[in-house]
Amino acid sequence: MSLRTLSRALAGTLLPLGTLQQAPGGLSSAAAAAASGGGWRHAWRRFSAAAEGEGETISVTFKDEKDGSEKTVRVPLGKSLLEAAHDNEVELEGACEGSLACSTCHVIVEDQEYYDKLPEPDDDENDMLDLAFGLTDTSRLGCQIKASKDLEGVTLPPA
Image (cartoon, rainbow, N blue to C red):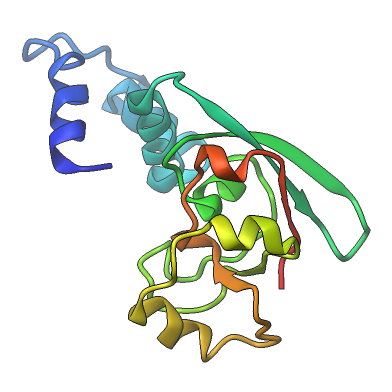
């Protein structure tokens, strides 16, 4: 989310000083929610998703190679597939939290048709992919794949 989008989202949610409801222990309700489960990262994801609104979404299926299960989720356009996985409790590692500093969110886009619709990976992503285990011709980093209409119905196994 851009700084401009964030500030616009915040502008509509700011309250006059002193009007925040206090939770037990003196924490604001937002801080209490963050502290009660999932931490600040989880609270930011929820805020970020709310700020994006309930706009258009696509269907993405994540496969779990451990037990063969699949989980299909709705992903807002523009959200990274790493964020979507984490928001929906899909096991996809992201050690650097999407900052393009590792290759732990390596996924393989098995269907060549979907892979061809993705933007070309930039030099930074290619550098990180070179470090990925099990690299294939259709390997990408989940943090760099943004949900778009072209990806409606894609299925992704972790690499």
